[in-house]
Length: 495
Ligand code: PHE
Image 1 (cartoon, rainbow, N blue to C red):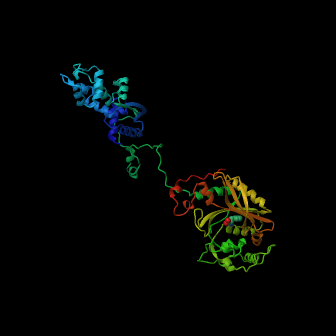
Image 2 (cartoon, rainbow, N blue to C red):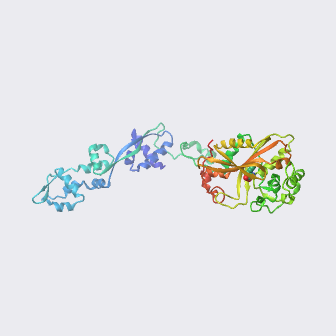
Image 3 (cartoon, protein in one colour):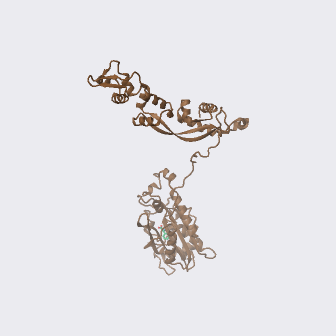
């Protein structure tokens, strides 16, 4: 605030009981907005002044009105331009601006007369009072009340002035009124405390209505928000989370444990990123008994299966790779479960990153997130799988599902999952599922009667649908607009 202007206002207010800011702006010849600014600062000092908002009608001269207030009305100019001996109408009309209006007004006021024969105009009266000019001058000075309303309306019609509505403030003395103010302190500094000078200072009170500065903080990426929702669903359904903190996996757990033959095309370097250094996992890291059983089930069969009948190579199983699915984690966890003292029905889930050497396009990247659910219990059937999928998707707000037979080396039967998306009005493929094969589970040592059902989805797909993105590059990678991460909404699934 300019302390000066604030003090000028206080000094004026000291002499009167109340004053309006618009009036003050005339008295102090200061812009009204500046007066209002100074008043707001005075208000912040606490009860020095009382402030009451008012709506005021005021009048403002148009440029034509301003011309009249300075030079006289058009009719007065006409009158003054007429010499004692009269003047020809044509000449008179050329001598002053706005002569047409001026002439007819002067005629109707009876100030002048026109001699039709000679075409000359004469003054009809000695003197005139230029009421219009006087009125406009009063208005110019803010003395609106001194001009009767009918005149103001007439001048408004003549476009000499316009009405404006201004918000002003009526000022009165407050309880702590005084005429001098010092600029209040906004901060308490260490120096003030050290010297004790704070005792004699006034401090600006907090303005709790002020908009705060948006705190600089982290923002969750949409993938993390949707991930949280899925996690919540699994937790509500009694699933516990598997540790997925190993992007690098051996072929053994990623493929062999899952009864995926070593010649399977998905193991090809076109689909899998193999690690070059270290390229192999030490075979002693694989449980030796289990390794033998996996080798046997692949090469010779067992558990009423004839296996694949090929030469299984431990070298192939040792190859390191970036895991191609989180089912590798599920395999490790099921092996662990099989080695618990006593089998306990179990529900596991995971949501984490997997890697595939895919051709990149608008919906595919070489890495994405998988959401995986696994249930191990006695005598589970395909019906249980279908039932739990309905339950799971219902929590996402999806009630219509369709299943299509599919093939996975590790599940039989296997089903692709389709859901009807109400927003998109179509069936979309959302995941893959199945009942894990005995050739996978029995070598691990799980009891014969235990079945394991499982399903997997991508996290990116529902996120893109939820956030209306149609290119995955808007979601992941160097082209992501950080503002999008800043501004995207919270994730609410239509439960
Ligand atoms: N691992 C499968 C995939 O990558 C998903 C899946 C998980 C399928 C569990 C069946 C059972 O697509």
